[in-house]
Image (cartoon, rainbow, N blue to C red; front, side):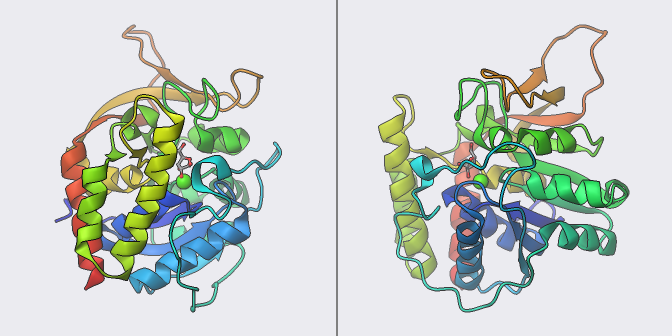
Length: 311
Ligand code: BDR
Ligand code: CA
């Protein structure tokens, strides 16, 4: 059971863990639409992958593609994590439902005004969100908040930078400096949520097309993570935590922090600076930073959502 059913727009770059965010959103939110951005793979591929998931889940939500590249820096993808398709490791059914539009920023603006009090959940580079804010700054007033996967006190793309923030640091700055209430699912918390072998086995045991695709994706994703890390038992399943932070907040411990994004510097591009000082004279927090997650309970939520989607 969700603790609450927020209305959300999910902006994503599927991506193995993005598709798990879509599953969680389908089960536990009032999903107003899915928007896609270039990130883990080029835009045509992340959009294709989102459409595949919409069909697999039988979702009746619009999918709109958005930015094909970042605001300022050169595009860079994450084939080394997700494969060139963004979803290597599983046989994906061809999507049969068409794309609904190619202007994600416009869709985001219109949907937020039509549904005041909704949230944005962002699990890829923040380009579409920055473009929406530039196009219509008044969306701030109608948004309840933005829950995003990104950042942390350590990096994965560079020693200091997490991929989503690094991939479009200028967009991330626009969003993080916007004054909109933020929730950050950074690497500190997402590395606690791993697709271990026994957890993948539970998904496979559900049976049916969706669970088969997802368990194949988890198997590829985790093998890749284990090969590239010497301290992880499976892939860090980052993105669904940005959804669960809204739908199942009791799974997390949280700290109110001031967070800033660094948009340049050979060693610092894409770094999130999380102010953990206890000085009385510190900046006012702009972000709820997720610190810990009850990983077994969060995995139960994901398994239940997959089983429920199977019908
Ligand atoms: C983030 O980057 C991508 O590889 C994942 O989908 C996640 O959103 C983790 O750094
Ligand atoms: Ca992602």
